[in-house]
Image 1: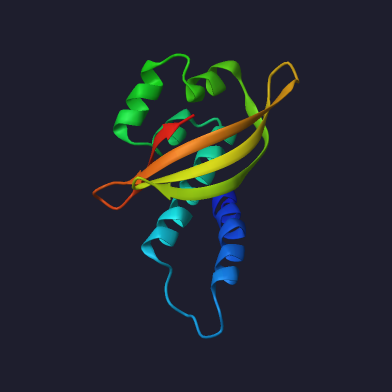
Image 2: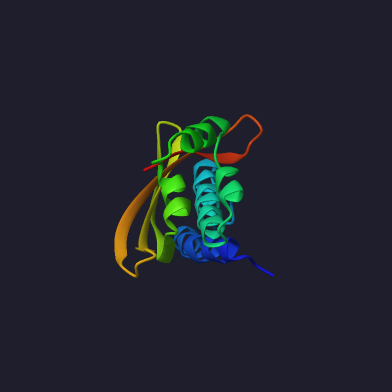
Length: 141
């Protein structure tokens, strides 16, 4: 069974792959395309962890330095979400680029606050591939 993150990743990636492929083109994705796909998957996993109220799971998707910075800053975005009971009513990926060796994933989300008000947010994730080959969040703003 596909997880929500896996399904969203497929729904984002399949149209890209269909546009890029021709009947004669059966080459594997480029390293850049693979990096983008993996980065989108990590971001979708982050949203899943937030929806599940799993702060440890959300933190585990980032580098050690990012986790420590997020945990040390009481007003960090991640801490605010859990502290204030914010949920995401909707969210989706709107773009992915590679800049200076980092995957930049842009997402739009409608946050639902505990008082019932909503707030549309643009989130920008920066992700890197570490020495072990894993893609991790290094910044979120």
